[in-house]
Length: 271
Image 1 (cartoon, one colour):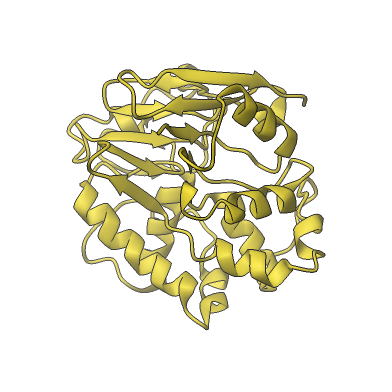
Image 2 (cartoon, rainbow, N blue to C red):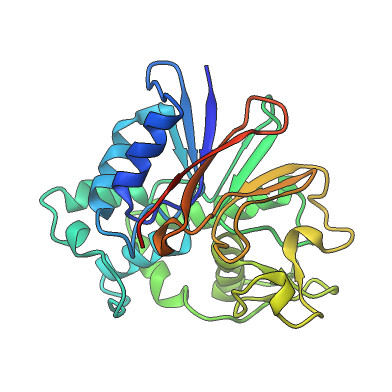
């Protein structure tokens, strides 16, 4: 049995199939972890959703910012952007089934036996894993409720950008959501920057990749994530980024988590 984590697919169905062929994926014995952003910008978001959903418990995915954006559009609380490619989902005959499945996916997944945690983007330095799971539970409860669409008008925005236990209401939920689905950089004091998207070598030096902030409380827990195509494949003792920019003509990458040093396999992608 193999357990593979796969970076952001974003509707790139053909590269996904090519990657699964290359790693000799067997749905009878193997498990796939997806780092989120199954949809958008690529041409086949609906096919990707159906494929992952139909794998059942052989696939685990966490929600990314593009996944939430799709849900917000479908609920009427956001507009399509110029480079969105979500029409195939929104017009699909099984649209409701796909969206209902998607909104029930988690924001964080931990396998204590495997020793890995997966999120789409990152964790604030003030959060340990126990707190991160507790905060994710709050968002997931909103998304899985019958009135889930009430969440989306309050989801967008970059503030607040600093965690404090006294945060409440929509501000608290917005920061939690942004952290799991949009975080890349923090400063040394733990304030998040949700604007910068570049490689760490090309941004303001006061900003630090979230996984390198000194004293972060999740340190020592191996965390696999995506979301950061300008960072690309990056690994340290307790972090592994798998977004290698398939959408932009880069690669789609998988890492085998059940082996030491998580060996990686990639396939090339067309822009």
